[in-house]
Amino acid sequence: MRSLLLVIASFLVTILAWGIYGPVLHWGQEGMTDAGASELARWRPFVCVGLAYFVIGVIVPALLLKWKGEQGGWTAKGVSLSLAAGALGAVGALGIILAFNFGGKPVFVMPLVFGGAPVVNSLLTIYLARRVRDIGPMFLAGLVMVILGSVTVMLCAPHKAHGPDSAAATTESQAKTTASTSTNTPLISSGSANAPKEKPPGGKLGRWILQLVSIAMVIVCWGAYGPTLHKGQAAMRQSRLRPLICVGLAYFAIAVLVPNLLLRITPESSGYYFWGSAWSLAAGSAGAIGALGIIMAFDFGGRPIYVMPLVFGGAPVVNTLFSTLTGGLWDQIGSMFPAGLILVIAGAAMTLIFAPKGGPAPSSPEPEIPTQIKTPQAETTTASKT
Image 1: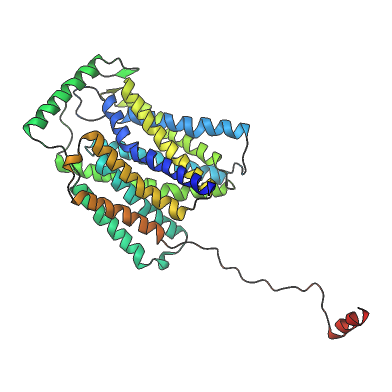
Image 2: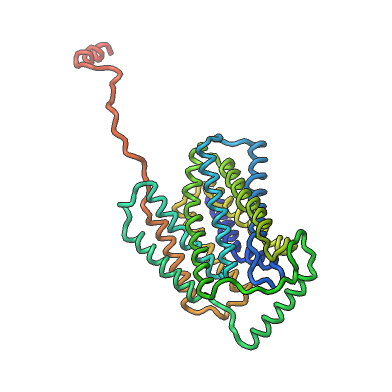
């Protein structure tokens, strides 16, 4: 009973952490964007996410590995696969930032990601296990539900009303934001705090397409993250801390080193302002803590067959509730949006539950070699002696 409670507590931590990841990261982008800029900051929030992963995914596991040790060992294959998994996770995090940068909102971006990623995960797992022929109708039905639900969520996402009152409120809010940003002293800043407002690239349709491309990038990367990391962990003889260290190192390289180089080449209208940096670091910490929650759930005896459907089903619900409550969108939710959300959640769960499961490879029975050949005469002699 105690182990079951620990499993539940572990994946609940993941559901809550991953559920608030998107909205908190969006706050970080807004807080790091200069007043008057046409687009949200992208590279500096990404750096903060990478720093948080480096602390939680590299420094902490390295200290635990030094003090307590762990089973397994370093292998070239395990390191390369775990680094690849970390790269997939980091590129997926960048896709989230780009989706927000092109106008996407957490209320529909994150449900689409959490609905599509398990589908890609299941398809990749099936392909690697060579079980494509074992795909059943329930799995296909789950795929159709995810697609229909994703389209419904995208089209029926709640938006703020554009009436006179809301316009006045928006103007007042922007004025307050401009005043607070211009008086806020950045930790490290490049670019003016009152940067001129530029015309965003592309029209409404172009930015909508860029949102879809960014979301698709996240779905593919995060969908492939799990199987790749699992193979890396198996190659390190089921070590848990070593693959996590590799993931953190990959995040540091892609999310910290690369963006800082790009900022030198193509500066953006953003700065390391205090609250923006704090929210971005909090988002990166939420992502890393969520990953640790899944590892702990498995350590306490949880099975992927029910842990992952609960995580991918619960995280978008938390995200939607959190986004609507903090964004004042509760009154703007129509009946079709929760219907689409339910379709995404149920379809994602079905694809995970009814995906063909890989079993052990059939082994040919080895011929039994008797240790002693008994003859009827020998058995009779033995019985007479007894």
